[in-house]
Image 1 (cartoon, rainbow, N blue to C red):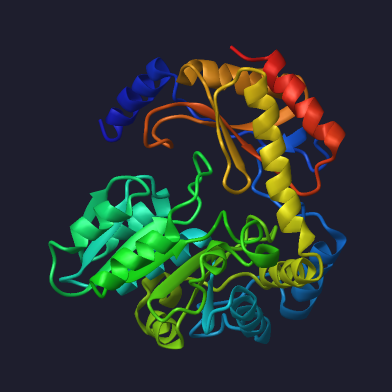
Image 2: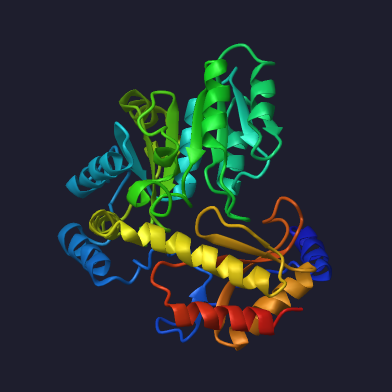
Length: 375
């Protein structure tokens, strides 16, 4: 029977405790949110909402076409200019999602004959970019510049190293300076995904590449998402102008995709300007993450020290991770639950996201709930 194999896979997932379900949330959820990626608390900020509303009223509900046909508005180019300036790069190109931006950067910068050196802990979007690219991919040990150096040494010709700047599962940061040094020794480019660094790391939230002194380098390309710290939707690629021009002409997820909705562009631009006026939000997000880690480990839980705003707390098994997250929800706390295949090491965990707008009382409440519901 057509698609009969789906039933077998569904049963296998059920036995392994890996079934995923959609849970629609109301607009006025009473839960304390430590699950979203709204690191700076801007998704519902009045200025950000107003930016989305004004853009929708001006440009309509959608971009109406691909960026090369009708989907580019003055708002898109304004966002690209200000985003590049804020992060310290020559140019930027906005996409409909961070996922699409990663697919574009990897596939367009790794043509046939290229070598892609990919960190073992990279996000699924980077992994899929490697799979779709015409170059050859070599996966190397996590956060290991020497492993990157060794892999690059086996190849002559075009090459790029690909890595998250902050890894989404455990919240640990990549050794960007070491990666850049390894790439430069072999004339390779460096492509990094700063989805979890923008708005949290660097001066005033300008991102992990800026903190590492790599902003504006002619051999570094950065992808970002607009859906985390900026509280909106979409993604972008930042880098040298010639790289951005190449993406306009070669990146399939740019050429053939409908442009980012104007409301999302307007919201992201409003959030970016707000962050520029209130740079202390970045430091506060890191402070909240550090505070959560300190309190949870003091209570005897096994957690990973956060380098940005993600706090990972280990769970004994997939089933107990799901039960733990459900018990937290029942107690008024919304936390993330990461299980295989979302985690490359096979270890299930609760994933907490620190937000700059959390109060001290909310942090203490979250810690009480997590500790009180532990397996």
